Image 1 (cartoon, one colour):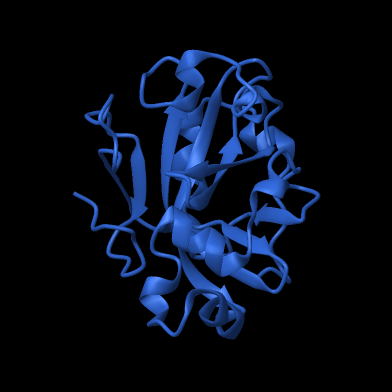
Image 2 (image 1 turned 60 degrees about the vertical axis):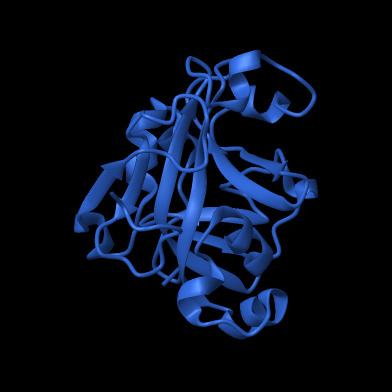
Length: 194
């Protein structure tokens, strides 16, 4: 897939988070030998209490307020790393959480990292996909155009895929916002779109 796909430039992310999030569905996320197509993404913005940015700049959230196109990698529940793509202008806390991938390259390595699992379960959640791809906290603040984690444009056919919007998952605040975007009918989602 990535032999023909171009890595997304910083300008792609320098837009409102609610525009970037659905546009990421169908793009390729790659780290090392492993890659997958983004099938589920959630938008977060400093204006709403579901976002880490809502409380302002802190040591943990500094990257979230950085320039567009950075990877914001944080630990969730003290267990899993999660990866986000920082959006909008520097100084605005906005990012897209990558929730699920359809694995396309490096499946053997993904299975070794996650244990022997069906392909549908390898990257069907934000913590699962970072474990499968070997994404760690030390990659927080890295440039998504330069790597080591990259996101590339959709290949022909993926850009026309039907995208469903729904409520975000696992939140107690601002859970009603329809800011989760999923590839309709995908069997690789963290949860079925609804």
